[in-house]
Image 1 (cartoon, helix red, strand yellow):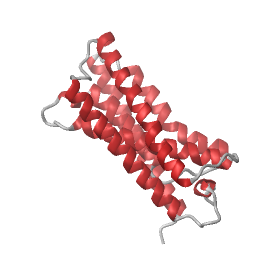
Image 2 (tube, rainbow, N blue to C red; image 1 turned 90 degrees about the vertical axis):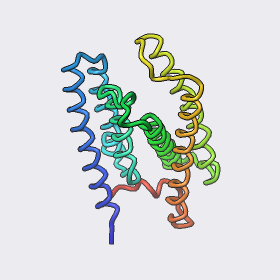
Image 3 (tube, rainbow, N blue to C red; image 1 turned 60 degrees about the horizontal axis):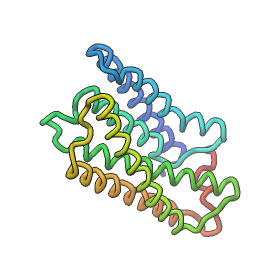
Image 4 (cartoon, helix red, strand yellow; image 1 turned 30 degrees about the vertical axis):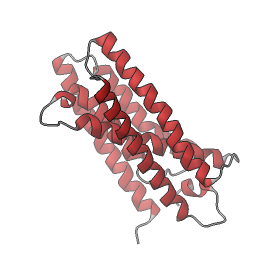
Length: 204
């Protein structure tokens, strides 16, 4: 039987791999004089935050949350430094990155609702699913604003017109829908008399 403890170790191992991959990205950024060099270390710290939260609050996050955060940060930072966004070898890289980000942020929102439940602030399960979708839509809009702002400030080309904006919106929306589906699967597998906090009980 696959235990929660085993899945958590897998999650941590995958996160560690992405942290190592980000170190390689930092080396490449330094080698080519890319302005994102310092961003890599910020990303590495952000990727470690879930592990810190687990230690501080003595909880275990649902499987996949930690590794998804590492993957999302690697794709966005690495994609810029390694020029994958503009490489003809990866024509759909930007759309894949937005899908993964939508899924990742959606799962982070789910964890936020779980933590609220642990602190006694509870919502109906379908409210949680709707919240994942709506809050992610807001974050998606803010992300596009940040991309456009970076293009103006740094003379980059992260945003490539209306078609690019529409495609990104579709992809991160699809990611948030998938996150809501994963959250739903987690919830239907819970005992009926348990709240969402059941999902983050510390592995023994």
